Each structure stands twice: as C-alpha cells, then as structure tokens.
Figure 1: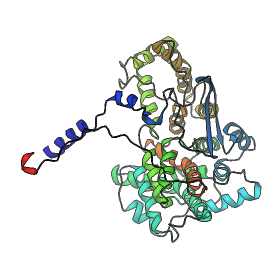
Figure 2: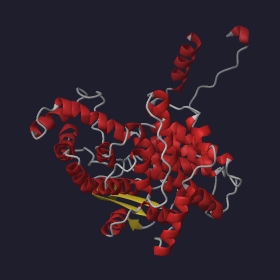
Figure 3: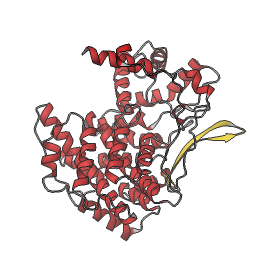
Figure 4: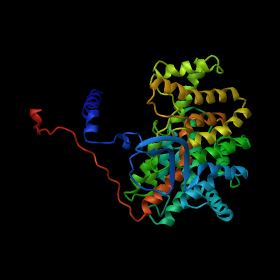
Length: 446
C-alpha cells in the first residue's frame, strides 16, 4: 500500500503545472478562448450550436439555437409532434444522411432499426448477464467492443458499411442498456432478473420503456422520452464525447473502438452525469427550503449555495449555465414545455413550479453575487432532464446511459464525416513540455 501512496504523491507533484505558464505560452486550457468560446479545431456539416453573436470581438447574448444538418431543433420537434408521431428515428436518419427522410425512406429506416435490435446469439447471456458489472455505462462500452467480434466486416471503412454499423449500434443501444441494468440489479441489488424482448411495432422510445417497465407507461411518457432522445442526439462537434469520436476515428480505427472511447468520455461526471448532480442538489433544496412558493427563501438558499455554505460547498448551482448558451438553451425550453404536462399527470406540479422558480431566480442571484461583469447564464438541458426521468420512473443508474442511447446517432454521424471527408488528417495537437531537464543517475547513486 505504501508504494501506491508514494507513487500517487510523486505523480501529483510531478504533474502540477503553474497556471501562469499557460498564459506565458498562450495555451488555451480546455481548448477554450479567453472569452470562454471554443477554439476552432475543425469543420462540420452535422450540428451547430448558437448562443451568442460576436460583435467587435465581444460576445453578445441571444436566445439559443441548435441545428441538426441545418434544420433548427425547434422546427424539427414541432414538426413530428404536430403530427403525433415520435421523431427519434427521423432525427437519426437526418444526422446520418444529411437529409430529412420522406415517408417511404422513414418506414424502411425504422424497419431496419427494428430488425437490428436483436442481439447476436448468446450475446445477452455471455457478454451482459454472465460478466457482472456495477456500472451500466461500463457494461455498455464493454458490449460495444464485444459486438466487434460478431461483425465480419468490423474493419471495413467503406461508407456503406459505416452506415450499416451505425444503424446496428443505434438499434442495439437501448436493448443493451435495459439488459445491463437488470443484470446489474440482479447481481448487486438481489432483485429479480427481467428480460423483455424488443417489440417490432414500437418506436425506439416505446421499446425502451417497454423493456424497462413492460406495458406500464402512458403515451405522454413515451412522447417525453422520445423528445428527450431527439434533443440529446447531437450537439456540435465540440462537445467532449463527439470530439473524442472524431479524434479516435481520425486514426482510422474501427467503429466499435471509436464508440467505446466516446462512451468513456460521456461517463464522466462533467459531461454525461450532470443531471445527477442537479437531482442531488434539488433534493437538498427541497429539504432545506420550507416554503417552495416563497421566492425570498429560495433566493436566500441559492445565495448560500453560491457562497459555498450549502449543498456540496462547491459554489455551483447545477443545471444553470452553459459553455455556449446565454439567454436560453433550446433543449431546456422544449423539455420544459412538455415536462409541465408530465408533472400534472404524475401529481408533481408543486415540484415542477419549484424547478421553474429556481430557473428564473438562479441567474438573478448569480448576477448579484458576481457583479456587473457576470456571464449571462440560463438553465441548461440537465436542469429538467433528471426531473423528467424521475417522473418516468427511470432508475438513476441509467440516466447517463439514456444520454448514450440518444447521442450514438450524433457520434456515428461525426465518425462517418471524419473517416470519409476528402481533407481528413489524423488529429494530433501539440503540448509544450515545461519540465526541467535532469541528468540520469545510476541506480546506486539515487
């Protein structure tokens, strides 16, 4: 044990780099510019995120917009919702192909997804249920690598094969997540093992709810989950997991290795697990704010959180603020619109109103705390997504895996673009070495 402690201490000491050196060498930490905008590292036609305009070198806040292949997310969502259909399949088609499908194309695509939902023979037992796992994200990543062995054309980088692999992964992710959850629950929580096979006549969202809950879900619940899958499907090439997909894909590796790497990125608490922190914070607020309708009491507790005197003492109001969005996050706007109806159905309207009050009051408290130069902030999608999942009675262990079930569509689109576009080149950024040069000493002299 002593060797681990010594190595850890030495590693931390050796890894510490003075912040001033980043300024000295003009290194943009986290690939962020001084104004917190992202460093431009590539070009894409897949997703675009707008949260501000740049005027005379300054960021000017505006209502957020998100585009999938040039189509605004708001218009996409309103389009399929107005016709009473689920939109994840056509969203995946749009991201992969660059075009909105017509009726025949959508039916054929959805039919192919239905065919591909079935896992290879013995895969469920050997890869998911026999190999125990405590974390569903890790089980998902392991299963993706396992699918490599079942694919005779795993290394084929032709566009047609990349599409084939993408459809297979998009179809199989919900099944693997559901089975992994019940396998984990059976092994480590001593609960019943439940395996429900996907049904060909159900949408992606309906199938996922069916595999988790059987027939015990409402149309509104399925609609909310479908919307959640659509709004999480893509978010530009600069988010950590999509960028990971592109970095690994630029080396011309196989699809399964690239997607497993993206899953490792998404698993991180600063990326895919953010809504879990929101849920923990909200439980703390609900306990410590006695009157949920008293805005002064709510503001006072939010001030304590910012002052590092409440909740986890980090000074963060989770779910409020975003790297790009300023006035509004379009995903949060869309989710909130439907979340109120769900709260009514689940008799949790008082709780929804508390969320809405915090969404409105948190920026005010933040500006008062930070002063005149405070960044313009708004509620992000994580603020409401955890509440929606909780109302859907989805276990917390699969909040982040649901993100993966959705984002696999965007990852696959970015991989195809990175592997096939004519100006491709392996991504290899530079790091400036700032260590001291030391002479080698013989073992007896150390």
